[in-house]
Length: 154
Image 1: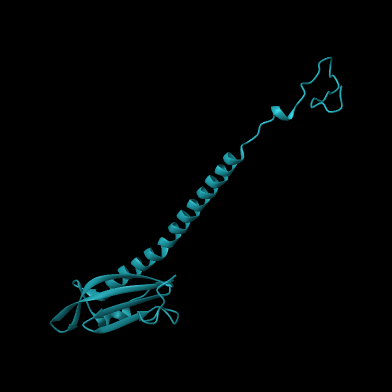
Image 2: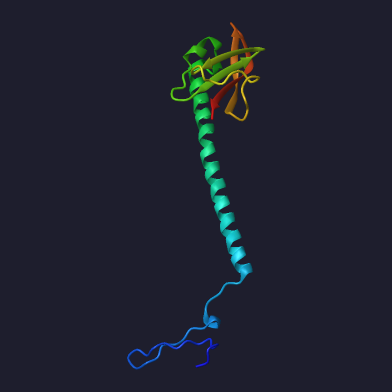
C-alpha cells in the first residue's frame, strides 16, 4: 500500500477483515448548525432563570398581602379602621411596618427596629408595598377615606 493512502489496513480477525474508516465517512456538524444549537440552549437557560427569579419574587408580595390582611382584621370594627387599635397589629417572623394614613395624619405599627420607615426614608428597591383603601374613624362620628399600607423588607 502506498504511504499517503487514507485507508488503513488492520489485521484480519477470524478470517474477515474489518472495514476501514476514512475522514469522509465520519459524522460532522456544520458550524452554523452548531452555533444555532448553542444559542438555543443559551436562550432556554435564560428563560428558565428568568422564570425562576419571577417565581421567587412573588413570595414577598404574598407576605405583604398577608400582613395587610392581618392588620386590617386587627384594627377594624364593623368595617371602620380605628387608629387607636394600631398597637394590636403584629407581623411575626417578618420585618414589617403597617401604616394607616387618613385626613393628613399617619399612624405606624412596626415589627421591630429594622422595620421600614416612612415613605420618604425607605428605598423603593428594598421593600414590597401593598396598600388598600379603608374607612378610618378620625373622631367620634367622623369617618374619612384613608389608606392602610403594609411594607415588608425584601
